[in-house]
Every structure is written in structure tokens, then in C-alpha cells.
Length: 232
Image 1: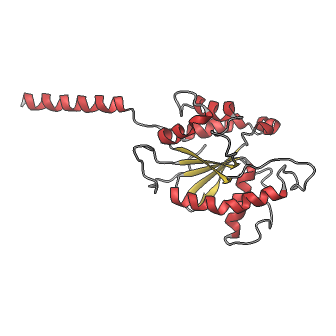
Image 2: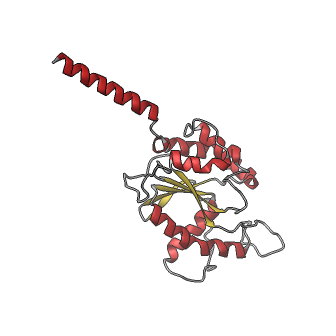
Image 3: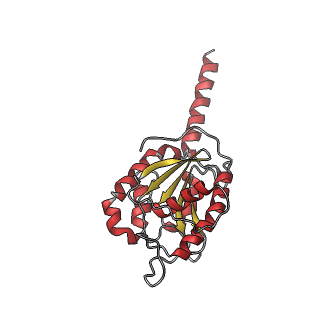
């Protein structure tokens, strides 16, 4: 992935419990409040590729998402905090998408809150997990005001994955959906390859200094200073 990031200072400063500034936010549609983790069903895709790319030195469990944020600066968010049920064939749906009309409205209503959160956190980049979250976010960008939230649904079918633009100085990326339900499209869209390339492209931002090497470096510098003074 070519880099589109500019050097910037985030508003969310590192703390003792969160030593890494959040530089990357993964954005999905929704997450069940009953799930204590992210991408549980897509463990091999998300957490496996994250480890394979070298971002993490060990394979993390979905419940260790806070560790990923605190040590590597990768956070998680969603358009709606109420779990969305996909693909009920007996209710009204939107064209080629499996989302219910009422569910799209819930996602649209939740997007302004997400935008507010992004302005507070100020990450370098956001990554949409699939076209649904990206299309609804882009729609809200175009509206720029409160309107009928079900006005339209931006269909990004056929849109190229990768960098898709910028919002408020935040770079936006869209990658293939990690959902287990996206089986065939995941293969057709070369999902594993694209996520792996993305993780490798931002790996430098995800690195944390090893305390052990900090102390060794300080010791060597102190020793060198003593030797120089002694020689004088």
C-alpha cells in the first residue's frame, strides 16, 4: 500500500495505561454488546494476518483487543453499537446488499457520533471493514447536515479497495469484509493479500520501544561517558 499519511500529532496523548497513541481505527458496522472481543469469528483472517504481517510478535486472542490498542496503537469502532442482524429475506432489503432497510437507518443515525469520536481521537487513518461501513460513512460526509437518514444508500460495488480519500485530515481506507459470510467475495477480492499488505504498510507506526533495550542503551551511553571522562 502506498503511504498517504502525513506527519501529525494526535489529540489523544499516550498514558501509562495507553502508552501508544491511537494511529489506526478499524471501523465495522456493529458489534454485539455480549461479545467480549472483536472479530471473534474472523480470528484467522484478522488476528492471524495481523500476526503474520509482523505487527504483533504473538497471535493475540480477540478478547485481547485492548492490548492491541495499548501496545500497538490500533483501535476499534463501529457505526452502530446495537448489533445488526443481516439478511432477513422476508423484510425489505437494499438492492444487492443483505442489510435490512431499518438496519441501514440505524447505521446512518450512528455515523455522526462516530465522526465526533474521530475528531476527538484524531487518528492518522481509519480502515473500513468492507463496503457497507464505508458507503454509509461517505454518504454522511456528503450530506453535511441532518436530513432524512434513509435518503439513499451509497453503493460502492466495484469500487477499488485501498485508499479512498481523506476526511478532516484523516486518511480513509476500505478493505475486504472480514465476515465469515463474505466467503466467496473474500477470495475473489484477494482479501487476505490486501489486509496483509495494509498491515505491513503501517507496521512502523505499530512498533513500541522495548524497555529492555532502552535500559541497555542508557547503560552503554553512561559507560561511554565515564570512559571519555576517565581518559581526560
